[in-house]
Every structure is written in structure tokens, then in C-alpha cells.
Length: 210
Image (tube, rainbow, N blue to C red):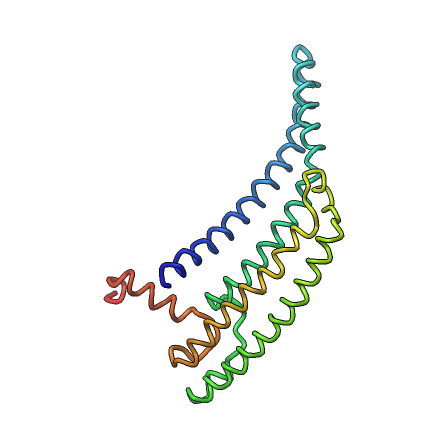
């Protein structure tokens, strides 16, 4: 079980890194092409002896830039996927904004009860959205609506929207894990950051002595 969890957590982190890198690379290429062809046009005006080849290069670069109308749509889709992977990752690392200042002032048994209530609310919320998103994605896939600027590659809105139920399923898994840890007295708050800190100490025992 620990092995599966280790692989999954690294996959989750790898997907977030990949999505960020892909968004950055696509945007960089699109912006670079839009700036490079104007550069070659300017050079062709300045160096008349090489005007024709410079204009040809500029034309090719402008053509590539105009063909990349899909880049904005793809970046938006990748960002949507990043959001849902990020939500689940934020639950695991307690990376979301903390609003439990008052709860932490209560006694440990009270903290556990409040945490279980909060966890149950989060599970109910995610469960409702999971069911609703599954119905929505099924309807969109059945309609076969093509994604804007991406339909030429066979990508439909439903393909992009698959991340919504998948993301809520990830959130449910994370909160079930948190609920289990609260019930078994392994933590009192929401988030899995405490376990991450313990794992870090085990992996780097020398750090405790500093």
C-alpha cells in the first residue's frame, strides 16, 4: 500500500510539473514566433542585400505563429487540469489557506470532532460535485462538441472536462484518507502535512540534530 501511495504521490507531483512546463513552453514558443517574424522583417529593411531570404524567413515564422491559434485554447485546457491536480495536492500538503485558528485553541478531543465534521462536509461537497460533473461530462461527450481551436485535432470539450470528475474523485480520496487518520488518532486537523513532515524527518534523520 505504501508503495502504491509513493508512486501515486510522485505521479501527482510529476503531472503538476509537466502541466506547468507545458503551459510555459507553449506560451514561450507562441510569443517568440510573434516577435521573431517582426525582427526578420525589420532586418530585411535594414539589410537590402539579404532582403529576400530574410523576408522568406519572416513569412515562414509568421505562418507558424498564425497556425498556433490552438496554443491559447490548449493553455487554458492545461490550466484547468492544473487546477484540479493542484486542489488534491493542496489537500495533501495543507497548502490551502488555513482558517482553523480558533479550532486550534480548543482541546484535542474537540479539535478531532470539529475536524471530522469539517471533513464530512468536504466529502459531501466533493461527492455532490462528482455526481453532477459525471452527468455533465457524459452529456458533453454524447453531444460530441469540439473544443475551440482544438477540434481539428479531434479534441472535444468532453475530453478536457474529464478532469473535473477525476479531480473531485482525487479530492474525495484525500479526505477519506484524512478522515481515517483523524479517527485513528494520527492527526487532529485537515491536511496531510503532518505525515509529510514525519516522512521528511525519517528520510533525513541528520536534520533533527541541527
